[in-house]
Image (tube, rainbow, N blue to C red; front, top):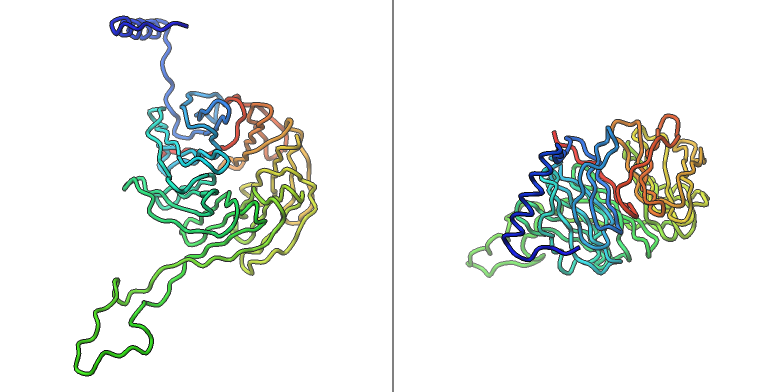
Length: 362
């Protein structure tokens, strides 16, 4: 299709388009206060979906190879990790109210951003290529904290609301990292050091005698290819799906030990999520068209639901009545009724859907 090159023709074309839109009553739909966000990896777009009508009301462009998405606490901004197999170094930013792309965030040497969380007013993200976790402060527009894991392919992410615990899966190391924020004694003078007789004592170290904050890491071996994971609603357990083993690892978060390894036969497992009531665990697999559902209490398989030819992202409805599963090979998002465990609908958000999130404006 040829585009007019003359600036006057461009203006006239825009005016004509606006006139025709108004004439036939076409107006842009506003973003609802409660929106479902869905990534299309192939189309490089973020779809904004009305969860009541299950209709896409707007799409915004994002960078190449988008994987995960998260929204700010006020529901006005979305952040998308641009992964590139651990090579890219950007977060795409979307104005959800204006339904438009904003300038990307360059994560610099923190390449391969993937897992996302928004806690304490900041964007938390894993940097798989840098074996690290970092935070971006939207107010200062700076990356203001970085912590290495020392593990390979630090991938998915969970941050507790008090920001004192971080959980992540390290796919190629077959481990789970637990980072805990702790207070350490003040630095003080070096042990055994005494000032010369009659001299003034040395000045206090920066920060005075205030305790220092640091992070302790606990590394827990799990199954091979651990990727998708979730923390139970009561905060007591962490379950991870191990794609290469086809197993599920259950970690007690008090003892920080694996208490069970379940032979779920979920090879190629991609994501794992608890239902809001904590009773069921849903596991998706890119290599299998069945959604595997486990009973959390008995740790037994409860049901398998045919949803397509493979699946990735899983998102629970905060109201507890539905789950949304991104069926990447089938180019749709499945709507699952959590009471009947039946598929009740499909949403076309673009080709190869993956990351899903909620955006809720108070």
